[in-house]
Length: 375
Image (tube, rainbow, N blue to C red; front, side, top):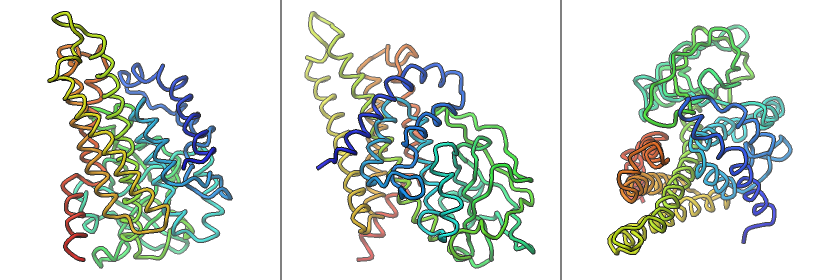
């Protein structure tokens, strides 16, 4: 059963979404502005640190609750929900693999709501094939020097720190390590943001490391443990995207249902025609199924059980549902849905990328099938 704290958090999230996010989202997405103050608002409310330890500034909330908060945010502003998921991902390596000294030094800032992180894993020629990355970290007298380029990085140029994966040896996947790079580090630079079809308030760009020097304490976990850390973090990150996709699909369904209840043709509400009514029913089934899959995976995670396969299932089911539901929602509105007068066309554009990032849905099928065939 939901606790009083969880119920209060979700109600707080809905209030912030209604008062602070909803009035701004349409203009901000058109202007492609980075919603820095929105993240500060969420941070001050404690919504950027929910699943992390209270002793370091988190809220000690179950992952299940955190994901429901992400879903609520996504139902109003998808770019911000994706940003919240990314930020949570950036703190995961320190929280899960950091030393007590690192947690004490770095987590309070990460979880304060005053900092925003970026997650530097993908490269121009290394996406799902993590082991082929070429960004390299070389030992120096007092730490490390990083050189290389990361690609498709959310918050590039806006983040306060960059959780970065780099090669420390030539031993394939066993030669990767994890670092936390300060956003002000000398030698760190950024390309122009990518011109994307959606999520216009989530700037994505290349991050360039030109002999960026960091001290020894910025290495997270053991040298060579980066692949394990990255894959572990991605399981959690996929649930964040599944929850965000579910929120986006719910928003599209709500708008379509409202329109079908008000729009009349042939002296009847269009929702009274069976063809359209059944379409809405299928949309509801898709959203409900998506929510069930991510909550199931989150409950396994909260119980300390393995959930890698279930995270892949949730990401696959929820993001495919988001694409289908947003497309069908545009169809419900007809010509109106194809215009910018309604947000459905934006929802459809935003849904597409959810099938791509945090591992394409083809990769999710690969992950799921491997779990099934290695029993």
